[in-house]
Amino acid sequence: MTTTRRAFGALAAGAALAALAPATAASATPRHRRLIAHDDFRHGLGRWAVELEKGGTVSASRGILEVDVPAGATVWFRKRLEGPYVLEYTATPVSAGGVNDRVSDLNNFWNASDVRSPNDLFATRREGALAEYDHLRTYYAGYGANTNTTTRLRRYVGEAGVRPLVYDYTEPLLVANEPNRVRIVSDGSKVRWWNNGRLVFDFHDPEPYTSGHFAFRTTWSHFRISEFRVWRLSPQQR
Image 1: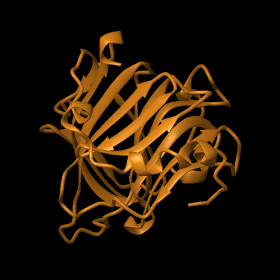
Image 2 (image 1 turned 90 degrees about the vertical axis):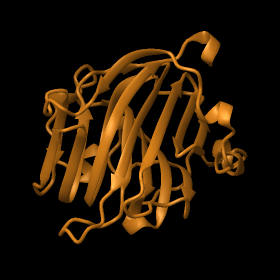
Image 3 (image 1 turned 120 degrees about the vertical axis):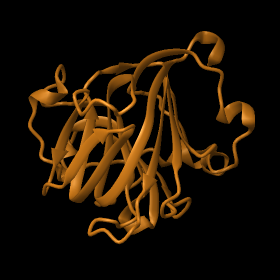
């Protein structure tokens, strides 16, 4: 993954320690809300668009979205999401001796648009290689990336070769076969990414991306994903 200078470093630095602090019960489990999108992964991939760099298997059945791939994979939720919202899912990295069972890269795009087709993300063809996503304007979390050595937040600005880095951590990281209960908060300038009740990224964006598409993103790995839900945040819950 290309590393860039911290274009938003000054904003992030003051919040870095707070972002990695354990969450309180109240903040980790906000009172929800109105359900605005979901998938129980029992009826195939009709709600998703799959982009694969070198093939692999992506399927949805029996309550599980299974992503088992030898290279880059992006699985887009077709419905465009408008903030403020809370998005939740559970993802487990599989390590059971399979050819792609490398524990790495629980990644997400969210509030994504493509500057080449800003009104329709899917009008531009992409085939799963990471560099093809440089033209997005989006947030990008990479949890346990780079063979499970880094956890980073980036704010893409739609320019080739430019992936501004907001946070760059060496922990927390993935644990083989252990579930990750992820919660993403998109609330105006407030951008938060939680895992298992821990606030990993807490970013105040003065020029926020407040709507767009969400995707699961990984490379050379095997994940089982479930319980995908998106909830509307009301003023009382913000």
